[in-house]
Image (cartoon, rainbow, N blue to C red; front, side):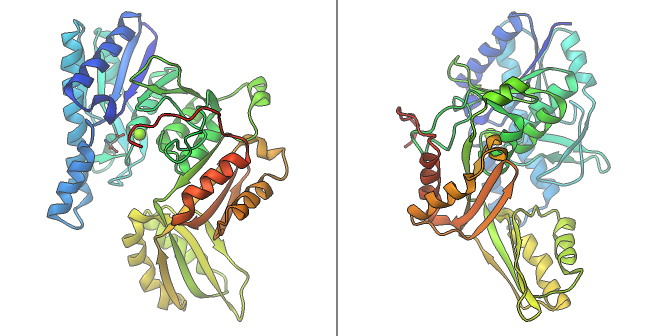
Length: 418
Ligand code: ASP
Ligand code: MG
């Protein structure tokens, strides 16, 4: 058997049939260079957004099962067209849905987690000399046998999970940017491309808003020893290597700070006047967990007069769900009110060097203060400091922090559409 390469192509890379042909050409070169090739492909261009819009024209709250059935159709189109285009290159290719590829998930529609991969049909296709094309961002649920999706951007996870299951050591993620940047170049035109980054740091950046990689794909890479090469499908340049297990030497050479991420997709929930007694936090967060709401920063202050406020952030897409869970709880636990503020943004500074370099948080907060940005909430991990600020201050905050840590380059990146 030849060494297996798994490649992922994003929606922009297959936005029209000409681009599909170009991708087929790149795949054909890889195959002819002596690799077995497995491809995970996203829906063409804005297909997924269009399907979501159409569903919204029919129902304000479409059933998750039907929503997933609808959205997975986008990837079925691109996978079949891509297989045809590869055949036009004189090679053979077969496309597979996530379910056919053996991607088994839990039952949670819209954000299912991969539980297992049984890629027998994929290895069979490779053995027969085909290029295997797999529809991105989808699987089939273990119990209900329903079609599920892995969340927006989930094709990255399809690719890396397949790479792990097939024993590939590298997964190439082809996208419309040259790699991972020290900040979003649309906000910071002097952001720099990062050549190498540890999966540990990339995980923090992705989880806190860097849209270039689906968070769970980085987790898969780290847990299964798959290095990810994020690169542009429009050039042949090297992109960014996300290293699952950096060597000691690589760790020594790491920059103190790897980048600044931002996220406007969360809202802030405050439960006011919560009685200060055991069991209340457990009640609140169990209710949210049972409804599959991902809670992020949690802050609770010391109590005054026996009550306290509890504040946390959640994805805005879960806001309706969270309110429905929390409102009945208010009177039950004797809290005063629950409020949602959607106009927030989170800005995070990530770098493994924070573990050993004191003063990083202080420098970050000084930069924000000099830029006149008020900090609403703060949370940290060993390699990250995050702040919640007013949504209108996000850009200023990212720029201020980026320059305070000397991340700016001299040459601005040319960004499409800005
Ligand atoms: N087509 C899906 C989306 O737009 C999955 C992906 O592109 O990764 O989110
Ligand atoms: Mg993406």
